[in-house]
Length: 234
Ligand code: SF4
Image (cartoon, rainbow, N blue to C red):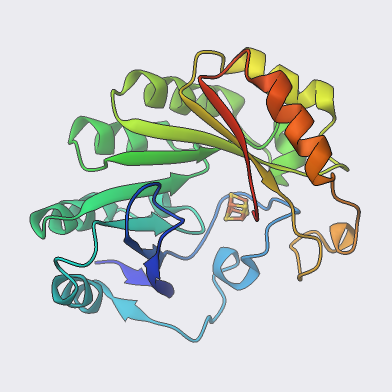
């Protein structure tokens, strides 16, 4: 049984084109220095504890108002109860969106095969050779590549997104991501927020790319993706 450590009762942003509720699961196998979900990632007390039953009761009570539920983290695939929860959300008539860092392709494949998710958003931290640096952890890049390929071939709606940090990503890095994932349906560049506490303290207060610079990157990435856009906030 899942225990969620955060909830956003209504969001018009997290699940594209849908009115959704976002539920947060604790723990993550990455330590991205630009991550601001510190307590959640480190499994510390968030002050919120929502059992699976409480979450389902809440969703049931909002039937007719919500289109879907977005499950985020942390890394949701670390939780073995995720598949069962997705099925219960479907039984309530809700669509399910999953946010993932792509480090667990076997678990991801199970969700895809069972048709347990309707939209997948996978973070792309960096081009392959810089992945571990950007993720703040030793990453098995073969697993990341496998997850990205699974998603692209799944037939399920999806997006890839990169939080763009000047200290980690050059324009050449972003174009390399484009080469790697070319043909993908949707790619978002997300602005990095250095004005909040971050896992990597040295990035706090550091510079960001300007809106114009991000738009310039998106323009250059449009040759690789059907849609490449800038999204505010990370
Ligand atoms: S940004 Fe990185 S550390 Fe934070 S939740 Fe996502 S994958 Fe984990």
